[in-house]
Image (cartoon, rainbow, N blue to C red):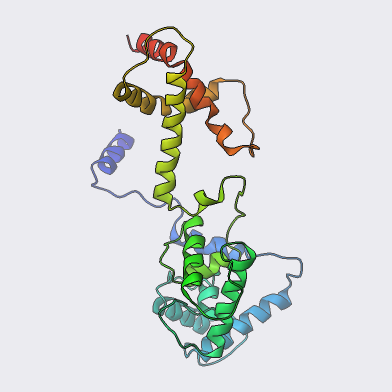
Length: 281
């Protein structure tokens, strides 16, 4: 009874759902599970704390360098996070490190000091090596660099505004997975919304191809009926694939082959519709 009342209050919006991980658990996750690498030692941790405190002191957030991540350091980290619109939790994660050591870059500022030119050159080097830009690093944030940044941001689900802030720096410097380059490169330059509509278009087109080339006897449906049928069948294909004893390849040699089941569904659209109608009847 109590469970039913709780579910009803959540559905009616009278009570918000509690987050799965409480805030203290999120902090604990970062504290107990640091970034590990081969030369990770207590000495490297100490060097990181010293570097953190030096950077905080240089930017006016910390008065004394103690060599320990004490209460004063935590308060300085929180103030730094607050000033830079980061999550204020006192935990120095990838975004806080990126914000501490890498400046915000954009095409707006024409004249840059040498340290900013070095940051632009490092940005351009990453974009050039990974094929986002054909421009060799020169330290000048021009229109071509901005376009390359936007391409990178679209691929990794960031806001494609051309501004290189903490989130973009963190992803640039390694907080990401490798891109699957088996699919045509142009698709990766589309926005997430465009990519969704592109996939929907390919699925519906594949089913229409099967419908109008089906060897099953009978007249072909009119275009509006065929479109409605194809759209409805896109929701059924995943269930059909689960029923078939086939294991799809993780990396098909031809990416468009992943739409072959949709063509097959279009070919057998009449038996499938008849079967669904029988189930409902």
